[in-house]
Amino acid sequence: MLRSIAGGCGIISQVVGFSVLLATISSSPWFSWTENYISVLGVRGSATTLFNSGLILTGVLSLIFAVGLGKSLLSGRLGQLGMISLVLGSGAISAVGIFPRTTGLPHNCASLVFFIFVPLAIFLVGITEVTASPKIWGVLSLTAVILIAVFQLVPWRWSGGAIPQLLYCLPWSLWTIAFGVRLLMRPKVVNV
Image (cartoon, rainbow, N blue to C red; front, side, top):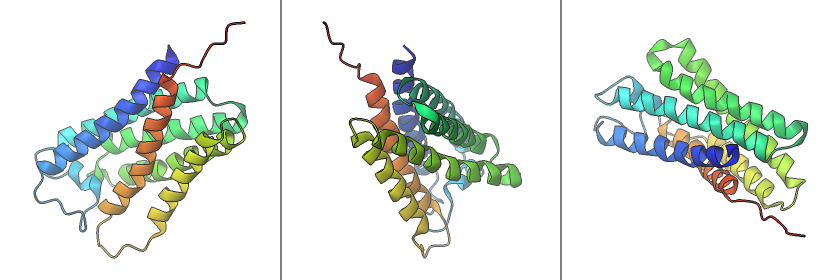
């Protein structure tokens, strides 16, 4: 049961996150992908409550996904460290909604925790999964981490960070959806 709930929460967390982002941007004509950071949507405009609430909900759903992933699929010390890292990253995305940009240090700390622990979690899960069978889940995870790193290391020429932030989140989102689907798939029971 935890496996199914976690899988559903993983998928829904990403649908909620991107739906809220699109809804907030559509009601914020002033927003610029090249001049703003995404978190400015949480402090300016008529959709700040929607944006911040969406981040909090995304983080809570992602946290449930992280715990279910750890308890259902991840084994060993690295797998459990991956789950803990994903729990911390998920809590941080909620904290970004609780502490918008105007709060200064709390917001910056929450953002930093998110941007550090989510890729660390995916990396640890990737290392754990690449040693298991089938290895495709490990390869998928490590590919997502490489994409996240590349998107963060590219020297973007814009004054705002919204595009790099979006590109950072896309591999994480696709990874979460893929593992959410995996959790929803029931393992085949062999009758002897």
